Length: 415
Image (cartoon, rainbow, N blue to C red; front, side, top):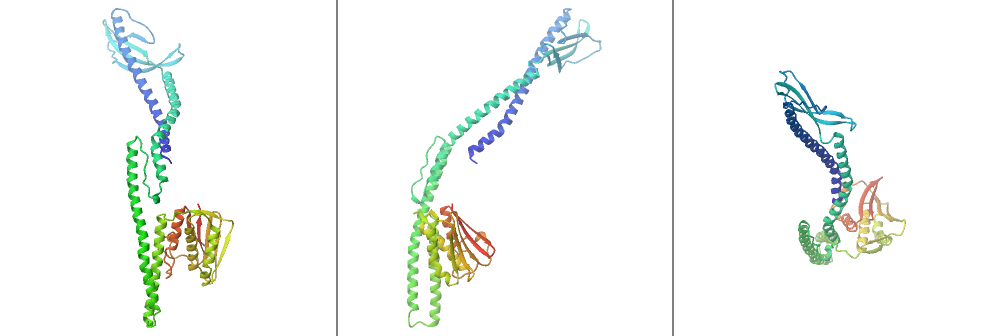
């Protein structure tokens, strides 16, 4: 989920809660202020009523002012209470604040009850509260639209930088330059990314140079060693024991050369050094590799059957496409049961190479890791499927494996 959407979700989640809290706060404050105002008026009315009684005039204004004589020993302390009185004019019950007390005036004891309407009745306050909530609910979508616009405007520099990063190609060796904005945090982030990318680019160029040098410096001595061994093997003065030793050395040197080639190939693929992607006819590549490996398969009495549902054209590096198919077929030939058929299925969305054989001796999820082999085949480096996985990764395809009814099924799902 995008950050803007997540921010808006939190806004929509908390906005109703805040609206309800604001409404409750408004209701409480308005009630408190109205009560304070009514009590202040009652204190003033009390003073006026006492003056009137002292002057011999007892005011009567039920139900707002109620005065009656009380026993001499009667005592009611001044206290404010709430009451409700029916108002015929309004045809509703209204909230009143009531002050009740006893007072000794001109030798007599009076029980005085004073009432004053609270500035706003409860229904009126609820109406005002309802109107406030309605107004806020109307304004909420407007605030949401404004909030979305502001967030998009504020985060626009971030998305511009993100777009530039996605389009950046490390293999071209160009410097990454991100757009500047008027937001300090985004500028600091851009500067950190630019510095990090520059360091990665330097490391990449160093690794690329090392790979190229290693390919030259290691392969040349290996080729010399192998040629010298062949000369020694052909020598007429060579003893049988020495010939066996040289044969073992030659096998190890050949294996080392293959290992060097495979590791260099993996490094080049990971560094994205195979950049000449074109549209290739996958059917032709598969058939070409099958034809080239038929003799190798025949040595183990294996047959290779191909089933093409339609013409398959895909955009990838032709050399890597050949390596992909070759490694899958060599793996099937090496580990398939003798006198069986290897099946190659090709469709618009997937490629499958199927061979019979006993179950794996390693977890299936480790099958595409480097130097992982199902058995201890002496002529296997354990890198063929790792190369397959890496080729798929750089082209966005998915390499997979499953074992079903005695069949090993290696699949490539095309993106």
